[in-house]
Image 1 (cartoon, rainbow, N blue to C red):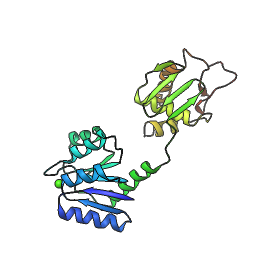
Image 2: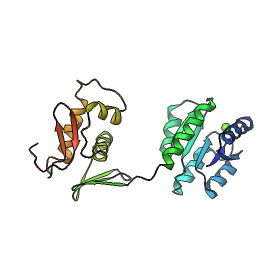
Image 3: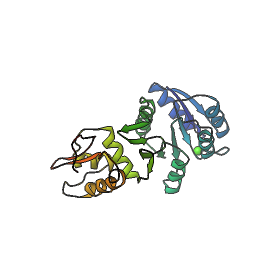
Image 4: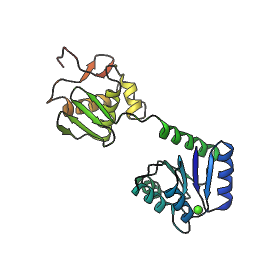
Length: 229
Ligand code: CA
């Protein structure tokens, strides 16, 4: 696995290079923005660790050049200030993760491994289809037949979960943890409300009906031969 580190502070750069080298990575260290930009644009890396505060070409420009050139190398950026603007800017420019300096090396290593796993995961099918319902995961679009349907982010995530586990009954608690990333008490109706909204959009004026309530258990998405819901 090849990593590019762009870091102008020499002690920090050496330390990262040595640590990641010992962790088994092949590391290229660029000590200024110009070199970093050059390496990033002309070579191929599995991941780039990018300090954004560089005296010459800053990290933002490197990141922007990469993404403008449609290079999807995962980028973890390092920022000295824990400012919301910085984080938002980095993520909007297409970074995958960030760390606020100072950080523990163990944390960096964990983030690097997570990003690489994500990047190295087998490319999922970009289209999910059940009956005449199509999800285009890459473009975040949903169609029922030819009709494009606009969903909120949560609705899309909910539908993606349901369609990926087509035919399985998903308990509310599982939906809550997967889609909302939190635990809801089982008596909350957040899930039910979200399902109802999703149904209005993707099921109400179409056939076959795809989202089904399994009483006392949860929800599932499938084409049922006998439907009355
Ligand atoms: Ca710096």
